[in-house]
Image 1 (cartoon, rainbow, N blue to C red):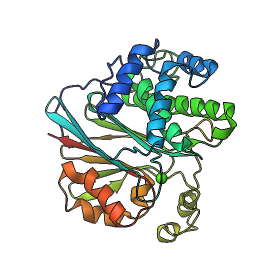
Image 2 (image 1 turned 90 degrees about the vertical axis):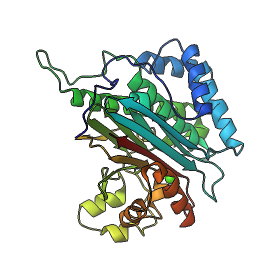
Image 3 (image 1 turned 60 degrees about the vertical axis):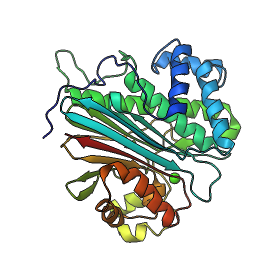
Image 4 (image 1 turned 180 degrees about the vertical axis):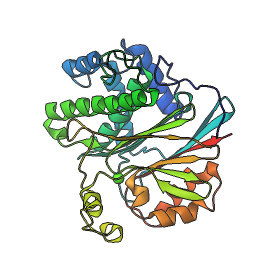
Amino acid sequence: MVQGGKRPNLLGKATPKIGVGPQFVENLDRDRGACAVPGCTPDFTMGATAQGFGQDPWSQDLLRDVDRLRQGRAPRELYTSSTRAGMMVWEAYARSDAGPVREHNEDSHLIDVDNGLFIVADGMGGHAFGEVASRLATDIVHRTLVGERDPEETRLQRPGDEPDPADVVRERMRYAMNQASLLIRKESEQRPERRGMGTTLVVLALDGEQAHLAHVGDSRAYLWRRGRLQRLTRDHTVVQQEVDAGRLTPELARLLPHKHILTQSVGFHGPVEPDTSTRMVDGGDVFILCSDGLTDPMDDVALQAVLHEVPSDQIANVLVEEALRRGTEDNVTVVAVFARD
Ligand code: CA
């Protein structure tokens, strides 16, 4: 078990420090200066929507980023970052690749080791609006979780009831994902050309010895612990429902053409009900977040076989390379978070 001091957590105020690569850092620093209201409170959401998307400095920056992505400069970098918390060091690595076929990379990801937050989002929607949706969702969830607490957001607490801190974090994650869904939905309703844009989201929040997960859609989280790979999320897909009901085998499900039809997505379906969970972290654990560009060409057995061969700091890199080598046509994104004690 990892012994360590309390990390900056998601329950109180935290200063956002972003560790995702120079371009993203620069953008968010600028946003922070420009946006009067930190985080994504309901007021901020309403304000952004009422002014019209693209009017406020924050969404203008976002649209500029998306333009850069549209011009073919899809991110191919490898990001690394680490932080020390008590006796434990979090190291995070990410790799995202548009793949050989797609013009755009509609995946987004975020690494914020200082706040223990890690996100992968896989956007969908025509004319590159999947990129808008996944970036918006990643940004809103991040800002909501590291921003000031909104007194309206948590309804778990009853008078005289001391809430379990883990419940509060999971509730905040649910709230943040619903905020993202609300804003993306409003944005797509206001602009017909953006109708149907949405995104998956998988969010990992590390808080002391606990790891909290929330997800919507078919981007996944895995835990690589002592040579064993465990899938931590269940896809929100029609075929997964069929597998759960015993009407389909997982092997057959992988072959079906409609395997990507989601039962839930952020933005497209309005309110979302993310699956959430909390587990204890052990030293040596590696949490892996990924888009389906990784898991389409590689089943869990194939992933495990590759993981046996690579050091923790190369997991994101090697998994993406392997998915590309196996001919993935999709965008592929992997974030690997290593707990070194
Ligand atoms: Ca995808």
